[in-house]
Image (cartoon, rainbow over all chains, first blue to last red):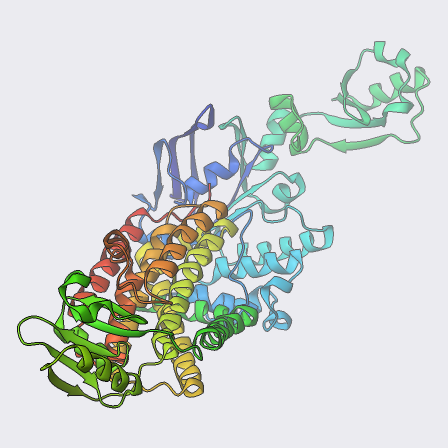
Length: 295
Length: 335
């Protein structure tokens, strides 16, 4: 494994009455996309903002290339916050030009515009952009210094599915340039698609860490059967199955699919709406914490 | 550092110039005020003659002439300042009753001519000291006041609210994630606002000045120096308010708390001469008072740098103190 480009050691962040980050440590190797996953309030944003040098930790430290965060880190880091406003009355190009002027080195404004597919929008007032367009502009601003490490805090929250997919394509093109990416998200699809390694965070602590496939293999040898709640008769609850009650559906976990299906057929459970799928990160989070990820 | 400062400075200028509504309001308000005030006060002649007496307090028993009806007697402690007022026809005559009576009268002033006749009928053997000079109209007195007041609002609200808006919207937080330092950001804001204020003030000076036929007597460069130091001091004052707070209500209240007393007590509309000592003492704290004292001294009296050096030093010192405090207490985040 590569040497870590970023290291977090025993990070603690306390606010009055709440500990947002509780002794969190992690190491991010250079060139990987590292995902911090967790529900709202898990401490993801607090952790990433301390890693960005925006927020001070109560204790613990963050090191970039083996040294505390300093001016070099600011020159070499690109940041996309969960929520950012830009200066009013500036066009897309002028907004990028402003931020390009804040760094000693970086890409040209034209390159960044091309990279983020903003050519047709470059003369538009940044207040008149759609959510997806604005997010592309903010990503462009995060890339103006050709960063070694790129922080993306819930970059696709609030975007429609099409804009989200477009954004993922952009991130994949940045990944192809061997950039290190730190991503927080509560979209499992996003994490599975983009991240080489993930850390699942709950109550300010990491409860599991590793490549997504490996984590799933470690925790699940089973497949998931999903049935609509109304298709599952009360009498079937006494069947020898591992049943999980979800809001709208019943989930059954099994490592012997044939036997489980036979049991359900024998109990006259209607299977026309049955869905069989492999375990995903959401299942993993549920397994580890007993909570749904998006709550 | 200069590259970062220039980038923020340029972006802020673009934002200001493109905010048409604010720009137009910035230009129109002072024009409307000058036109309105000169309309209300300009044509009205004062009903009394006004005679300055070189003394600390007017004692009507000191001489029968001091009991003349329809004449206002005002104490003047400084002979040179009194002569200046006669020159500008701000008083109709200056009288010194110590020893052999002496008086200064403006030979260009019709009211001075009449008051002189009144004086000679009552005070025999007084020594005549003629001076000449055109009258300073109220609108001439008001003009620097309006320019200064416009500058004050632009400095305090323009900078204070802009920084507050940047903080609340998260734009400051985004800038904080770059190599930009607080000092560079604040300097860019100060310089941007300074340039814009000088531009607007120049436009207003030329525009309103030509409408009211204002005649500047002193050095133009010195007037610009007063404007630069005055704007610096008040921009820096605005930054100290905006440096830390995030509440619009609080910042708005604090800015009002500063601007209203300055507008009323700094001598924008009327001279503070004759007002209670404590009022003059309070007014002396405000940068705007020093801006207006210096600006009127240069623009109306033709004063040189030595005469306004106290005001210039006060403005430069407060600029440094406010800027240092603003940079020290500056906060990027909105919590």
